[in-house]
Amino acid sequence: MSRFIKMVVYLSLMLAGSALASPSLHPQVANWIETNQAPAGVVLELLSREANFVENRTSYIQHQVTALKQAFAELDVVIISHGRELEAFSKSFSRQPYQQAFEQMHQQGVTVHVCEVVAGRVNKTIDDFPSFIDVAPSGTAQLNDYKKLGYSVIRVP
Image 1: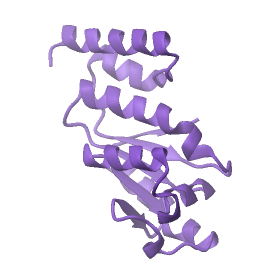
Image 2: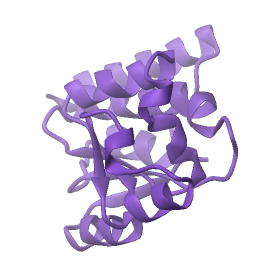
Image 3: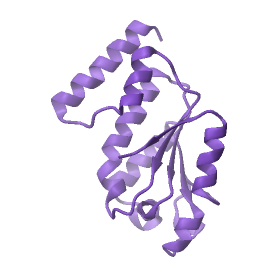
């Protein structure tokens, strides 16, 4: 994609965001798009104790994923949840619109990991998560593996 087209996409996203009061782009995401410099990969890190963290941040996360995928179609984008918020990814929340949004992101090539260690602390097992969720033995180790591959990490605020 040419730099001009990427700039048009970026500006369109920014205008749509302000017109519809949708979430803004993370500054690093905006910079990659503006400079036409794709990172090796991107990890969106979720780490919270907030009960509704996933539900409250889904629009923000979707916005980052959509912008990155539109600008850099082949970019690998990963989501790692390794805080108490990972309960929201369990099967008991499968009818929630936010979980359906994560499944759609998965269908677009986004890998979604949750931490087995933290899942155990909240009485969840591998079987408690839908098939589109990868239960990693350790969310921190998974994150470090991506960092070693050169992926950039964005902690979702």
